[in-house]
Image (tube, rainbow, N blue to C red; front, side, top):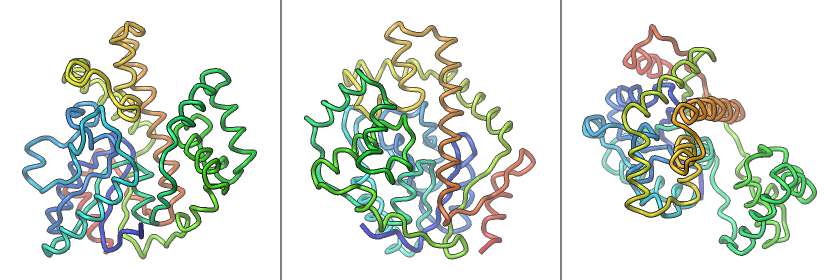
Length: 308
């Protein structure tokens, strides 16, 4: 799948204010918004993903929200194909496409194209997942380093899902995934793109994250997860690993009390934000938008427009 061109992108770490700024920016661009969030595609996962409210979705057309049920699988390939379709539809209507969200892999796949690779080998995946239970994620990462050191160097040792995929591709094709993904590394300078990353000072971002997490629990996150389990029985592998949902599932299983659950979600979300920002720094297409409490969403949108 080729790169998505002639689009606007607004991204940043979780809790950085992307939704409200995106709506302001869309109004100035005569744009429709395409979600760039790998968890907002799931129906019913609203509170824990900070999905745009009904009112926000009515104020500006939004796409690729509530695509599948949370007990279904949804791949990167499916997202990229759907995003390209929506971009074409929006542009055919004479409007701009604005992608808003914080999933770095989605962003990279749209900016640089995507190597789809062979279909999943579920027997192999189950075998490797069992191996991780026995020997741990670090041993799995070391195994990848033996067959594909370039891929191992780019993947976090705890990112077992992508490590397993890299091992799977090597098993099926006999080639390292890093070699097959070469086009995925073709970058462009920031001044040739319209990719904007909201950048908060670290302490302020942590405060925003802690407050956001508390608001989610106050808004009924535990009840939301309980309702999803009642309706669907279980969540898909991807959905169940989402920050917030994973910890609430442990709480509902009796493994964590509520106070510990909230603290754990806050901690994991701060760690997730750090990984997001590391990804964005690795993409040459991105340019930073310095943030502060003194800036309103409208002011940030104006600032972004002024750079063009």
